[in-house]
Image (cartoon, rainbow, N blue to C red; front, side):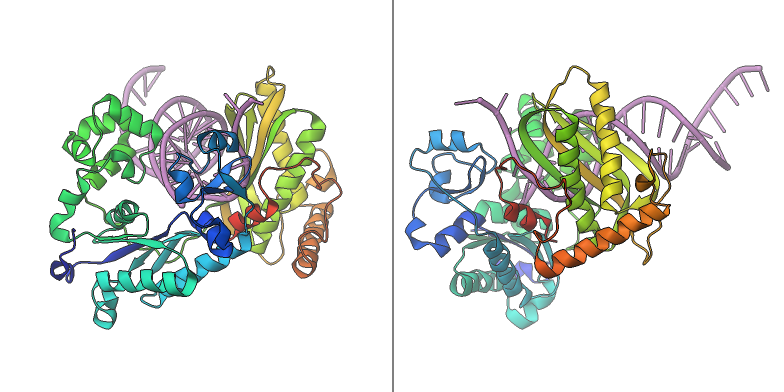
Amino acid sequence: MFATLDSMSDSPAILHADLDAFYASVEQLLNPSLRGKPIAVGGGVVLAASYEAKAFGVRGGMPGRQARRLCPHLQFVGGHFSEYQRLGDQVIEIVRDFTPLIERISIDEAFADVSGSIHLFGTPAAIATRIRQRARDEVGLAVSVGVARTKHLAKIASQVAKPDGMIVVDPSTELDFLHPLPVDLVWGIGPVTRKRLAEKGIATIGQLAAMPGQSLEQLLGRAIGTKLGELAWNRDHRDVETSHRAGSVGAQSAMGRQEASDEVIETTLRHLADRVATRLRAKNKAGRTITTRVRFADLRAVTRSITLPAAVSATSILAAIAGDLVRTALADHPDEAVISLLAISVAHLEDEPALQLELPIELGDDERRPGTEAGAARWVLDKSVDEVRQRFGRRAVNYASVALSGGRSVPDAFRELAEKD
DNA sequence: TCTGGGGTCCTAGGACCC
DNA sequence: TCTGGGGTCCTAGGACCC
C-alpha cells in the first residue's frame, strides 16, 4: 500500500528481514504434526511461541505456568537448537546472494543495504519478494521484510508486515506511514518509556514527533530524548554495519531461591567463570573490567565491578575476583540471605598477546596472582583444557567443582546457541 | 507458588588531572 | 588564599533489545 517504486531508485534502500516466530516455526517445520497448533519452545519460561499460541496472548519471556493458563492446549516442545542456527544461517545466505552489505543483529534478523544491487536484481521490492520466496521454497520458513530509506523505518516496516508479509515504504510517504503507529514500535521505547509517555497522553509516533524536543529530553533524559525525537521525525542516519566487535562477554545463572552460602556461591561462580573465560580465550580476548551481579529473592539486583590495570582471561583468576566482588555485594546487604541469580561479565576487552602476563593483584594466595609462575601455570592449564574440549566435546573435561547439580530450566544447548557470535 | 540468558547504551556522581 | 572549568575514567544502576 505504501509502495510506489519509482521514487525509491535514487534513495538508499535498506531492507530488514525478520523470520516469523522463529524457534516455534522451526519446530513446526521439523515436525508437521505441530503445524497449525499452539506451541511454545521452552518449559519454565517461554522462549518462543507459535502464532497460534500468540493468538491466546502467549509471549516470549512469559513464565510457562502463565502461558498454560492463557492457552490450556498449549504444547511445550524442547528446542532443536543446532537446527535454529543452521536454518537461520541458511536464510542469511539467501540475503547475501543479493548484497554483501549485511548486518546481522540476531539469529533470526538482519539488515541489508541493497542500494547497489538494484541494477543487478531490480527494485528493492523485487529483491525483497525474491528473498521471501526463496526462504519459503528452499528453507521452508516465513520471513517478513520491511524496505525503506533508513534502518529504523525498515525495521518498523517489517514488524508491521508480520506475519509473513512485506512493506515497502516509499520516501514520499514516510511520515504518513510512521506517525499513526504506536510509540513502542520505535527502537528504544520499552515498557517503562511507553508508560511514561502514555501518562503525558502520547501514544503514537506522530504525537511523539509533535512534542517539543526540550520537554522530550526533560521527560526521558538527554540522549534518549534526542534520539527518539530524531526517530519520530524520521531522521535516522545509521549505516548498515557489516562487522561488530563484542564489547563484553558474560554469563548468568538463575538459581530459583537459594541460600547465599559459600558453597553455592563458589560452585556457581566457578561454573560461570569457566564459561566466560573459555569464550574469551576462544576469541583471543581478555578483559579489564569484571562485573558481577547478584539478584536477591525479591528480584532486586545489585552489581559490583572492578577495573584492573591489565586484562584477564584465566578461569581461576576470574572466579577469584568475581568471588571477592560478590562477597562485597552481600556484605553491603546483610539482610539478604537468599539469592536468585549470579552473573559474571567481562568488559574493556583487549586482544590477548600470545603469551599472557596477567596482573599481580592484591589477593591472598599465589594461585590467584597471575603475574606469578602459578598464575601463568593456571593460564596454560586453561588453554589445554580448551583444546581437549575442542577435540572431544565440552563435557570431556570439567574442573572438579564446576559440575552443577541442580536442574536448570534452560537447556545447555540453548546457552551454547546464545554464545555463538 | 514471580521472570531465562546473551548483550548494548545511558546517566550520574566522584576522583583525578590539567 | 580563593576561585574556575573541562576532560576522562571508574562505579552502580537502569532501560532496552533479541
